[in-house]
Each structure stands twice: as C-alpha cells, then as structure tokens.
Length: 381
Image 1: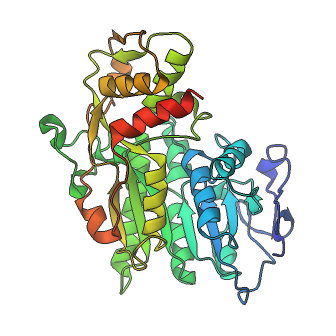
Image 2: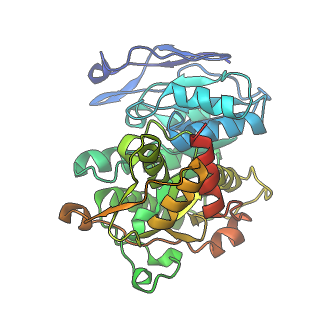
C-alpha cells in the first residue's frame, strides 16, 4: 500500500509528533487544501484495482474501536485497516492488547494520528476501495460542559463523512448513543426504549449524538434511495479494553477496581438505578453486522438500538462483579447522589432490540449478569 500524503496544519504543530503507520502503510507530509486551516487528505494512495479489502475506523485506538479493529483483522486477515485517532483518550496500547486477546499477529495497518476535524474524507475514499467505514471517534465524556467543543468534534464532521461514503458507495456505520433518549416516558414505567422515544437528551453529549442522527435523516430525505448508513445507539458498554477510559469506564470496571484495591464498592443510594449493560463483544458483533459483515449481507439502513435488551440494577452489577472476582466480603456502601449529577442523570435505560433484530438480523449473545461475572473473572487475573 502506498503512503498517504497529508498536510500538517499550523494549529497541530507540536501536538502531533508524526504520522506513523505500520506494516503495509504509513503517512508522511504532503499537500492539502484549506478552509481557514489546512484539511488533511491523501494525495497518493493505493489503486482501486487492488484486491485487498480496506476498512476505515475512526476512534480505532479507543475502547470499542480497538476491539473492532482486532475483530476486523480476525474476520479478514488479508484486509488492510486504517485507524484514524487523535489519541486524546485512545492509546496504541489498546490496539496491541486487543490483538493479543484475540491471539492475532501484531497490527500491521495504517494509523493516522489526526482529528477527524482535520481530514478531507472525500479524496480518502475516492482514492481506494474501502469495504466499510466505521465512525466511532467522539468526545465520550458525558460530563463535559464545553458545548462548542462537544458539538464541533462529535456533530460537525458527520455530514462530510456521510457525503464521502455515499459518493464512493462505501457502507457507513456510526456510533450514536442511548444518551439521545434523555429521560423518556418509558423511564417511569421501566419499559424498553423504542426508537421513536429519543430526541430529548439530558446533556450536550446526548445532544451531539442526536444532531448526528438528524444529519443522517436529513441526507436520507434528499436521496432517491436510502444510503447504506447505519447509526447504532450504544447503551452501557463494558468489557476488556476499557482500562484507559478513566472516569468514563463502565460501572462494572470501576466497582471491580475498588474491590481489587480492598475497598468496598460504592454506589448511589440505593443501588436501584438500572442500565442496559452490553458486553463489548456484542457491540463489535452488531457493528460488523450493520456493515454487512455479519450473517446478513444486506442490512437495512437506518438507526438502531445496540444493547442487551435487559436492564440491570447497579446493585446487581456490583454483586455479579464481586462473585466474578471471588470476593466474599466488602459489602456495598451507598451514598447520596450529588445535585449536579442528578440534573442530567439517566436513572433507567433499556434498549428495545426488536427493530435491530429485524433490520440487521442481529441479537445479543451475552446475558448481562453472566457476562458481568465473567468480566470480574477476567479482571481478577
């Protein structure tokens, strides 16, 4: 694979040390076009005549992204994977560890250490055959209050990514979020969230994901046929590979770390808060299915829930993780929820997975309690 050429914008000088790839591809300085600052784009890339499948994963060094990259390498060992990540929260170590967990040879794809804001995706996709594009890059910290930054990074690039994929005929799968629901009427009744219950998010993170969906719907409305674009509303994801997420790691991971340190697990009183907990391997499996890489080669485009379809209380999460860790003492401690968190807190979530099964031909493999116990055993190693 020939090297990508893209220009380093002035604002990135000193922030990005180099554009390294491994295996068959890398990156080097080159020409670009600018609108205020230079957009990065490839000037020379592999010919479309190449037979190798290629996959683009934005946010590929993050928790879900690195697991997805490893799954793609396992699914298509001869394929080439292009990871785009600005490494604000991602890490190359996530990719290395994900490949090790799958028993794979080392990663040999391309890594572009740039922000999606600085890339011109149209020439990237026009210059080569890409089998599927996975857009996971985002600010995922739901407590961020800088609305401008959240919207600029999460929502603004969406239309250009979609247009580039549609123009090149590349299937696009992007990560939306259960945060788009906010607190719908189903919360009080503790019933699964249907797709049409979304739209009133409680924080700017959820709003940024809702705007991504709005762009998706807007584009679909003006095209003669639905574009091959699938948005997946991720619910609460847990599993191997999240150790570098800090305060945004899953409740299961945080409780496990407390207990492994010899401290009692701490929860908001009275532990009855309940979320749809979904194992990362199910998230990856559904994401692949949404791109036509599962059992159904022709998934229906649209927006779908991605959860376990089961809501599990945080008290039950703590109990399951405790059993997995093999810890018999350390009873759970409860404390009152701070008022500033209560303002945007989702007390209950549960994905209605019926449309996901119909449209993508996919259903979750992991029952949450059993998967949480298994995760506890994994973390105890």
